[in-house]
Length: 149
Image (cartoon, rainbow, N blue to C red; front, side, top):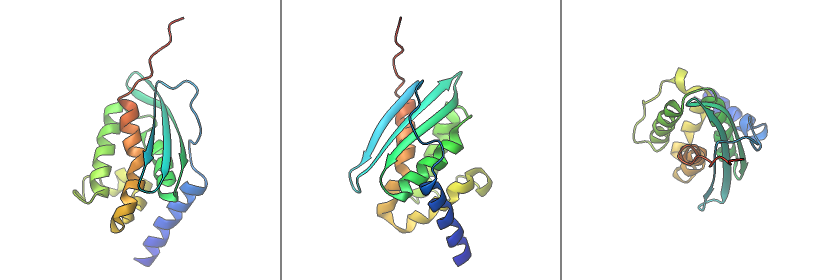
Protein backbone atom coordinates (compact mmCIF):
# COMPACT_ATOMS: atom_id res chain seq x y z
CA UNK A 1 0.00 0.00 0.00
CA UNK A 2 2.86 2.51 0.62
CA UNK A 3 3.88 2.23 -3.06
CA UNK A 4 0.32 2.95 -4.14
CA UNK A 5 0.18 6.00 -1.85
CA UNK A 6 3.46 7.23 -3.35
CA UNK A 7 2.06 6.83 -6.87
CA UNK A 8 -1.08 8.76 -5.94
CA UNK A 9 1.02 11.49 -4.35
CA UNK A 10 3.17 11.69 -7.51
CA UNK A 11 0.04 12.09 -9.67
CA UNK A 12 -1.22 14.94 -7.49
CA UNK A 13 2.18 16.64 -7.45
CA UNK A 14 2.50 16.28 -11.23
CA UNK A 15 -0.91 17.83 -11.92
CA UNK A 16 -0.34 20.51 -9.31
CA UNK A 17 3.07 21.62 -10.58
CA UNK A 18 2.30 21.13 -14.30
CA UNK A 19 -1.44 21.66 -14.59
CA UNK A 20 -3.06 20.71 -17.87
CA UNK A 21 -5.41 23.14 -19.62
CA UNK A 22 -4.50 26.03 -17.34
CA UNK A 23 -5.40 29.53 -18.44
CA UNK A 24 -8.28 31.51 -19.88
CA UNK A 25 -10.51 30.42 -22.71
CA UNK A 26 -11.11 33.38 -25.00
CA UNK A 27 -14.19 31.98 -26.75
CA UNK A 28 -15.96 30.53 -23.73
CA UNK A 29 -19.64 29.71 -23.85
CA UNK A 30 -19.77 28.95 -20.10
CA UNK A 31 -17.72 30.17 -17.15
CA UNK A 32 -17.72 30.69 -13.41
CA UNK A 33 -15.49 31.46 -10.46
CA UNK A 34 -15.72 29.71 -7.09
CA UNK A 35 -14.05 30.13 -3.71
CA UNK A 36 -13.44 27.76 -0.83
CA UNK A 37 -13.79 29.99 2.21
CA UNK A 38 -12.43 27.25 4.46
CA UNK A 39 -8.92 27.29 2.99
CA UNK A 40 -8.93 30.27 0.63
CA UNK A 41 -8.76 28.38 -2.68
CA UNK A 42 -10.01 30.30 -5.71
CA UNK A 43 -10.80 28.65 -9.02
CA UNK A 44 -12.19 29.82 -12.36
CA UNK A 45 -13.45 27.51 -15.10
CA UNK A 46 -14.28 28.42 -18.69
CA UNK A 47 -15.65 26.06 -21.32
CA UNK A 48 -16.51 26.06 -24.98
CA UNK A 49 -19.59 23.88 -25.49
CA UNK A 50 -20.98 23.13 -28.93
CA UNK A 51 -23.59 20.53 -29.95
CA UNK A 52 -23.77 19.43 -26.28
CA UNK A 53 -20.04 18.50 -26.27
CA UNK A 54 -17.35 20.10 -24.15
CA UNK A 55 -15.01 21.04 -26.98
CA UNK A 56 -12.52 22.92 -24.81
CA UNK A 57 -12.00 23.75 -21.14
CA UNK A 58 -9.52 25.84 -19.19
CA UNK A 59 -9.12 26.61 -15.53
CA UNK A 60 -7.18 28.96 -13.29
CA UNK A 61 -6.52 28.14 -9.66
CA UNK A 62 -4.93 29.84 -6.72
CA UNK A 63 -4.67 27.67 -3.70
CA UNK A 64 -3.55 24.30 -2.53
CA UNK A 65 -2.09 21.49 -4.59
CA UNK A 66 -5.21 19.34 -4.16
CA UNK A 67 -7.58 21.84 -5.77
CA UNK A 68 -5.12 22.63 -8.55
CA UNK A 69 -4.46 18.93 -9.27
CA UNK A 70 -8.18 18.15 -9.20
CA UNK A 71 -8.85 21.01 -11.64
CA UNK A 72 -6.15 19.78 -13.99
CA UNK A 73 -7.44 16.20 -13.93
CA UNK A 74 -11.01 17.45 -14.34
CA UNK A 75 -10.18 19.28 -17.56
CA UNK A 76 -8.56 16.18 -19.01
CA UNK A 77 -11.50 14.01 -18.01
CA UNK A 78 -14.34 16.13 -19.39
CA UNK A 79 -12.83 17.54 -22.58
CA UNK A 80 -14.60 15.90 -25.50
CA UNK A 81 -17.54 14.40 -23.60
CA UNK A 82 -21.16 15.51 -23.47
CA UNK A 83 -22.44 17.98 -20.91
CA UNK A 84 -24.70 15.33 -19.37
CA UNK A 85 -21.81 12.83 -19.11
CA UNK A 86 -19.64 15.47 -17.43
CA UNK A 87 -22.33 16.36 -14.90
CA UNK A 88 -23.07 12.70 -14.16
CA UNK A 89 -19.36 11.93 -13.70
CA UNK A 90 -18.95 14.99 -11.46
CA UNK A 91 -21.81 13.99 -9.20
CA UNK A 92 -20.54 10.42 -8.86
CA UNK A 93 -16.98 11.52 -8.14
CA UNK A 94 -18.15 13.98 -5.49
CA UNK A 95 -20.22 11.26 -3.80
CA UNK A 96 -17.15 9.01 -3.78
CA UNK A 97 -14.97 11.77 -2.33
CA UNK A 98 -17.56 12.51 0.32
CA UNK A 99 -17.53 8.79 1.18
CA UNK A 100 -21.25 8.36 0.74
CA UNK A 101 -20.89 6.01 -2.24
CA UNK A 102 -17.56 4.28 -2.70
CA UNK A 103 -17.95 2.25 -5.90
CA UNK A 104 -19.88 4.47 -8.30
CA UNK A 105 -16.98 4.62 -10.78
CA UNK A 106 -14.57 1.83 -11.63
CA UNK A 107 -10.80 2.40 -11.69
CA UNK A 108 -10.65 2.38 -15.49
CA UNK A 109 -13.32 5.08 -15.72
CA UNK A 110 -11.88 7.22 -12.96
CA UNK A 111 -8.27 7.08 -14.25
CA UNK A 112 -5.78 9.38 -12.49
CA UNK A 113 -8.60 10.84 -10.41
CA UNK A 114 -8.29 7.77 -8.20
CA UNK A 115 -5.38 9.63 -6.58
CA UNK A 116 -7.89 12.09 -5.10
CA UNK A 117 -9.76 9.37 -3.21
CA UNK A 118 -7.05 9.47 -0.55
CA UNK A 119 -8.32 12.85 0.63
CA UNK A 120 -11.32 11.11 2.18
CA UNK A 121 -9.09 10.48 5.20
CA UNK A 122 -8.81 14.28 5.62
CA UNK A 123 -12.35 15.72 5.65
CA UNK A 124 -11.16 19.34 5.40
CA UNK A 125 -9.33 18.49 2.14
CA UNK A 126 -12.41 16.98 0.47
CA UNK A 127 -13.67 20.49 -0.24
CA UNK A 128 -10.38 21.25 -1.99
CA UNK A 129 -10.74 18.18 -4.22
CA UNK A 130 -14.39 18.85 -5.07
CA UNK A 131 -14.07 22.61 -5.70
CA UNK A 132 -13.25 22.27 -9.44
CA UNK A 133 -16.14 19.85 -9.89
CA UNK A 134 -18.57 22.25 -8.23
CA UNK A 135 -17.23 24.94 -10.55
CA UNK A 136 -17.74 22.70 -13.59
CA UNK A 137 -21.38 22.05 -12.73
CA UNK A 138 -22.02 25.69 -11.93
CA UNK A 139 -20.40 26.86 -15.17
CA UNK A 140 -22.44 24.39 -17.23
CA UNK A 141 -25.60 25.83 -15.68
CA UNK A 142 -24.52 29.39 -16.55
CA UNK A 143 -24.09 29.95 -20.27
CA UNK A 144 -22.55 33.28 -21.22
CA UNK A 145 -25.06 35.40 -23.14
CA UNK A 146 -24.05 35.80 -26.77
CA UNK A 147 -23.37 39.30 -27.94
CA UNK A 148 -25.47 40.32 -30.91
CA UNK A 149 -23.58 42.36 -33.49
